[in-house]
Length: 185
Image (cartoon, rainbow, N blue to C red; front, side, top):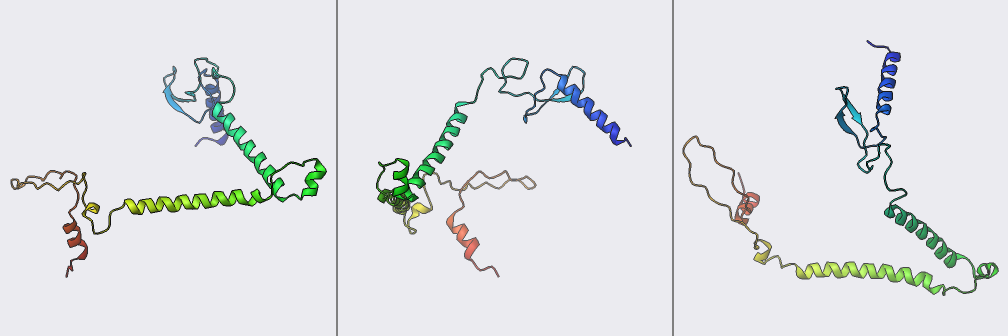
Protein backbone atom coordinates (compact mmCIF):
# COMPACT_ATOMS: atom_id res chain seq x y z
CA UNK A 1 0.00 0.00 0.00
CA UNK A 2 1.14 3.52 -0.69
CA UNK A 3 1.24 6.12 1.99
CA UNK A 4 -0.95 9.20 1.95
CA UNK A 5 2.11 11.39 1.39
CA UNK A 6 3.06 9.40 -1.73
CA UNK A 7 -0.47 9.75 -3.09
CA UNK A 8 -0.42 13.50 -2.45
CA UNK A 9 2.93 13.83 -4.28
CA UNK A 10 1.56 11.88 -7.25
CA UNK A 11 -1.56 14.04 -7.29
CA UNK A 12 0.51 17.26 -7.15
CA UNK A 13 2.78 16.04 -9.99
CA UNK A 14 -0.24 15.21 -12.13
CA UNK A 15 -1.69 18.65 -11.42
CA UNK A 16 1.58 20.36 -12.31
CA UNK A 17 1.82 18.43 -15.58
CA UNK A 18 -1.75 19.36 -16.47
CA UNK A 19 -1.11 23.02 -15.63
CA UNK A 20 2.05 23.11 -17.77
CA UNK A 21 0.20 21.93 -20.87
CA UNK A 22 -0.72 24.94 -23.05
CA UNK A 23 -4.21 23.63 -23.79
CA UNK A 24 -5.33 22.95 -20.24
CA UNK A 25 -7.98 25.37 -19.06
CA UNK A 26 -10.24 25.12 -16.04
CA UNK A 27 -13.58 24.21 -17.51
CA UNK A 28 -16.42 21.84 -16.64
CA UNK A 29 -16.19 20.46 -20.19
CA UNK A 30 -13.55 17.73 -20.20
CA UNK A 31 -12.16 16.09 -23.31
CA UNK A 32 -10.11 12.91 -23.00
CA UNK A 33 -7.14 13.00 -25.33
CA UNK A 34 -3.78 11.31 -25.72
CA UNK A 35 -0.84 13.56 -24.95
CA UNK A 36 2.57 13.45 -26.65
CA UNK A 37 3.89 11.38 -23.74
CA UNK A 38 1.65 8.51 -24.98
CA UNK A 39 -0.48 8.28 -21.89
CA UNK A 40 -4.08 9.25 -21.44
CA UNK A 41 -4.67 12.64 -19.93
CA UNK A 42 -7.61 14.89 -19.43
CA UNK A 43 -7.37 18.30 -21.04
CA UNK A 44 -9.75 21.09 -20.22
CA UNK A 45 -10.39 22.76 -23.56
CA UNK A 46 -13.30 25.09 -23.92
CA UNK A 47 -15.06 25.12 -27.33
CA UNK A 48 -15.93 28.78 -26.78
CA UNK A 49 -12.25 29.71 -26.77
CA UNK A 50 -10.78 31.07 -29.98
CA UNK A 51 -7.52 30.01 -31.61
CA UNK A 52 -5.31 31.80 -29.08
CA UNK A 53 -3.22 29.48 -26.97
CA UNK A 54 -3.84 31.42 -23.79
CA UNK A 55 -7.41 30.23 -23.24
CA UNK A 56 -8.84 33.71 -23.72
CA UNK A 57 -11.81 34.19 -25.95
CA UNK A 58 -11.52 36.49 -28.95
CA UNK A 59 -14.54 38.52 -27.86
CA UNK A 60 -14.23 40.46 -24.64
CA UNK A 61 -17.02 41.26 -22.26
CA UNK A 62 -20.29 39.60 -21.34
CA UNK A 63 -22.74 38.12 -23.83
CA UNK A 64 -25.73 40.31 -24.80
CA UNK A 65 -28.19 37.83 -23.31
CA UNK A 66 -26.44 38.12 -19.93
CA UNK A 67 -26.61 41.92 -20.09
CA UNK A 68 -30.30 41.90 -21.04
CA UNK A 69 -31.06 39.45 -18.22
CA UNK A 70 -29.20 41.58 -15.68
CA UNK A 71 -30.82 44.83 -16.81
CA UNK A 72 -34.24 43.14 -16.89
CA UNK A 73 -33.89 41.82 -13.35
CA UNK A 74 -32.72 45.17 -11.99
CA UNK A 75 -35.55 46.96 -13.82
CA UNK A 76 -38.11 44.54 -12.39
CA UNK A 77 -36.87 45.08 -8.84
CA UNK A 78 -36.86 48.87 -9.22
CA UNK A 79 -40.35 48.89 -10.78
CA UNK A 80 -41.67 46.68 -7.96
CA UNK A 81 -40.22 48.95 -5.29
CA UNK A 82 -41.70 52.03 -7.00
CA UNK A 83 -45.11 50.32 -7.33
CA UNK A 84 -45.27 49.26 -3.67
CA UNK A 85 -44.02 52.67 -2.54
CA UNK A 86 -46.75 54.39 -4.56
CA UNK A 87 -49.40 51.92 -3.38
CA UNK A 88 -48.68 51.84 0.36
CA UNK A 89 -46.89 55.06 1.42
CA UNK A 90 -49.28 57.77 2.67
CA UNK A 91 -49.76 60.82 0.47
CA UNK A 92 -48.31 63.31 2.95
CA UNK A 93 -45.01 61.35 2.95
CA UNK A 94 -44.86 61.53 -0.86
CA UNK A 95 -45.59 65.29 -0.68
CA UNK A 96 -42.86 65.71 1.95
CA UNK A 97 -40.35 64.10 -0.42
CA UNK A 98 -41.51 66.36 -3.26
CA UNK A 99 -43.59 63.90 -5.28
CA UNK A 100 -46.88 65.50 -6.23
CA UNK A 101 -47.75 63.86 -9.55
CA UNK A 102 -48.68 60.18 -9.43
CA UNK A 103 -51.65 58.12 -10.64
CA UNK A 104 -54.74 57.56 -8.53
CA UNK A 105 -54.50 54.79 -5.88
CA UNK A 106 -57.49 53.19 -7.60
CA UNK A 107 -55.12 51.80 -10.23
CA UNK A 108 -52.99 50.05 -7.58
CA UNK A 109 -55.88 47.61 -7.14
CA UNK A 110 -57.55 47.87 -10.54
CA UNK A 111 -54.59 46.90 -12.77
CA UNK A 112 -53.64 43.68 -10.91
CA UNK A 113 -57.32 42.74 -10.68
CA UNK A 114 -57.81 43.28 -14.41
CA UNK A 115 -54.73 41.17 -15.15
CA UNK A 116 -55.91 38.28 -12.95
CA UNK A 117 -59.42 38.36 -14.43
CA UNK A 118 -58.03 38.49 -17.98
CA UNK A 119 -55.80 35.44 -17.36
CA UNK A 120 -58.70 33.52 -15.76
CA UNK A 121 -61.02 34.33 -18.68
CA UNK A 122 -58.35 33.36 -21.22
CA UNK A 123 -57.93 29.97 -19.51
CA UNK A 124 -61.71 29.44 -19.43
CA UNK A 125 -61.96 30.42 -23.11
CA UNK A 126 -59.13 28.01 -24.02
CA UNK A 127 -60.77 25.13 -22.15
CA UNK A 128 -64.11 25.96 -23.81
CA UNK A 129 -62.53 25.90 -27.27
CA UNK A 130 -61.03 22.49 -26.51
CA UNK A 131 -64.45 21.16 -25.48
CA UNK A 132 -66.01 22.54 -28.67
CA UNK A 133 -63.36 21.02 -30.93
CA UNK A 134 -63.46 17.57 -29.30
CA UNK A 135 -65.90 15.12 -30.89
CA UNK A 136 -68.60 13.61 -28.65
CA UNK A 137 -67.82 10.28 -26.96
CA UNK A 138 -70.27 8.43 -29.23
CA UNK A 139 -68.47 9.56 -32.40
CA UNK A 140 -66.29 7.07 -34.29
CA UNK A 141 -63.83 9.91 -34.85
CA UNK A 142 -62.57 9.27 -31.33
CA UNK A 143 -61.52 5.76 -32.44
CA UNK A 144 -60.45 6.20 -36.06
CA UNK A 145 -58.74 8.97 -37.99
CA UNK A 146 -56.59 9.35 -41.11
CA UNK A 147 -53.58 7.85 -39.31
CA UNK A 148 -55.30 4.64 -38.17
CA UNK A 149 -53.53 1.43 -39.24
CA UNK A 150 -55.27 -1.92 -39.33
CA UNK A 151 -53.17 -4.82 -38.09
CA UNK A 152 -51.87 -6.99 -40.90
CA UNK A 153 -52.36 -10.74 -40.78
CA UNK A 154 -49.40 -12.99 -41.46
CA UNK A 155 -49.85 -16.20 -43.37
CA UNK A 156 -48.86 -19.43 -41.69
CA UNK A 157 -45.18 -20.17 -41.95
CA UNK A 158 -43.48 -23.52 -41.89
CA UNK A 159 -43.10 -25.32 -38.59
CA UNK A 160 -40.10 -24.14 -36.61
CA UNK A 161 -39.93 -20.84 -38.44
CA UNK A 162 -39.92 -17.77 -36.26
CA UNK A 163 -42.69 -15.27 -36.76
CA UNK A 164 -41.48 -11.85 -37.92
CA UNK A 165 -42.14 -8.77 -35.83
CA UNK A 166 -45.53 -7.38 -36.70
CA UNK A 167 -45.61 -3.86 -38.12
CA UNK A 168 -46.88 -1.02 -35.96
CA UNK A 169 -50.68 -0.84 -35.92
CA UNK A 170 -53.64 0.20 -33.80
CA UNK A 171 -55.32 -2.31 -31.53
CA UNK A 172 -58.94 -2.77 -32.64
CA UNK A 173 -61.59 -1.59 -30.16
CA UNK A 174 -63.26 -5.01 -30.05
CA UNK A 175 -59.94 -6.56 -28.95
CA UNK A 176 -59.57 -3.95 -26.19
CA UNK A 177 -63.16 -4.52 -25.02
CA UNK A 178 -62.66 -8.30 -25.03
CA UNK A 179 -59.47 -8.01 -22.97
CA UNK A 180 -60.87 -5.50 -20.47
CA UNK A 181 -64.50 -6.49 -19.98
CA UNK A 182 -64.93 -10.21 -20.76
CA UNK A 183 -65.17 -12.39 -17.71
CA UNK A 184 -62.28 -14.78 -17.61
CA UNK A 185 -63.15 -17.62 -15.21
